[in-house]
Image 1 (cartoon, rainbow, N blue to C red):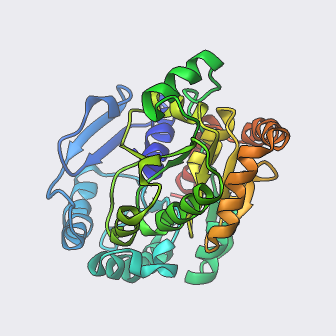
Image 2: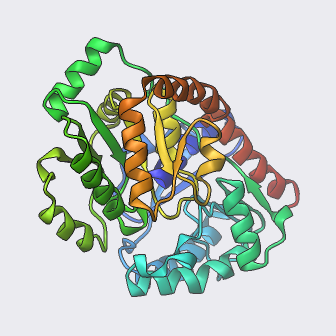
Length: 362
């Protein structure tokens, strides 16, 4: 799972267990895993069609969902990924993590960006209350959609207890498994244009041209639409052999990879929160990240900030985190302090507070 998936999993699991007095219906558009049925007060329901295209999104939310909500006599519909039903009279709360599609529409296929930009303004006004994951996103939604800021609650993401520092001997094993026993910089996330994979590859190539060392770049994540330019650049790289693509890895392995990295390098153009930042910090790993959108809010004074449009800036950060051990140690210490403010328990509690506001006014 990526950001939205983890938010849904971690918060819903806590909410249903903390509130046995309520009955929850979890709605799926395809066969589901039993691991998502967290408690006896959860009833899973599958309604088709599987929503693999914007036309099917519309059918599911505007035709199928209203009928089911009426049949269930639902008091409230909560959408962890922001989609609502304009046809249903049931009160609704979306979690709108960010509206990157407004600012970077060309990162998405035409039909998807049309759907988001047509319907999400309507969803924002339809909602009884909106949840988002950063003050940056709150202000963006407020200003872009002309929504009353009092209608939007900020609920930060949390960090899984799986992420923690590793002993040196364990780090050596991880580096041997993934990077041929070499030190490495790590990227975690989708290989998507918005994540600036091309800029990261260019900066690493520049870094390696100047620094003849054995450092590798490990990228963890699955491919997504529109990364052909990064693929073409990768094929031309002089230091292509120093790039390692792992694809998706289990959370247990990702925790080890993060705790064993020289630094996390997370330089997207746009981000609503950036969970890998706090996962790295709690793992005792320094963070290089963009100075744009929500990331300074999440990273605080613990990250090394760069301009994602400037490969020189990124390459210099890589050099600093290679050469300056004192800086690296200070960043690790600051990271441990910064990540204290993020926890899934707090996230679930605040999310429930938003739900309670609506319940109290039914």
